[in-house]
Image 1 (cartoon, rainbow, N blue to C red):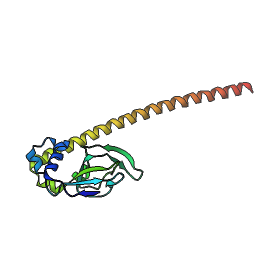
Image 2: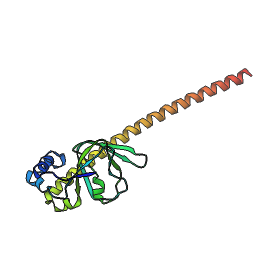
Image 3: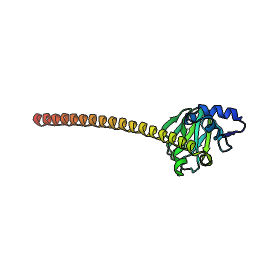
Image 4: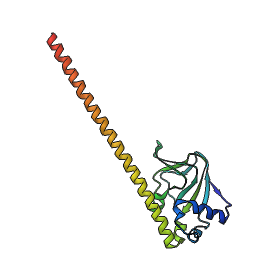
Length: 184
């Protein structure tokens, strides 16, 4: 990723005003975010933003482009991150190694926020950002729960179909053996 070096304070304020996680903040509160620790980055298509297992203290807010969230060596797809969404919040909050990989699907622009920024923010601003993160995590959990239920229902349906097919095959085998015995 390449750090974007020169962005005027006015442009930063305009960008922050459009980002959902900061929309509920007043202009004065958003102004608190205009510090050196809030950095803008550009990622090229295919470039990794987060590597599973790494430890760092950032979360990212996607401004433009799309990101793919994958897990494990087989790159199992988990989610697609769209502009306005954030990513990396689990490692940021827990200080644990990253739980997934995140890579740019296309050229993307991101804001990187580190824990230093959160510590210097006024309590009200920090709490609002944390609340937005918690709400985002809850939405993701609800979405994943729905997917698990759907997969469970599909598996159950396939299991029932397989059981019916096996029963039918067993009946056919019995009928065939019965005819063979009668014919002997």
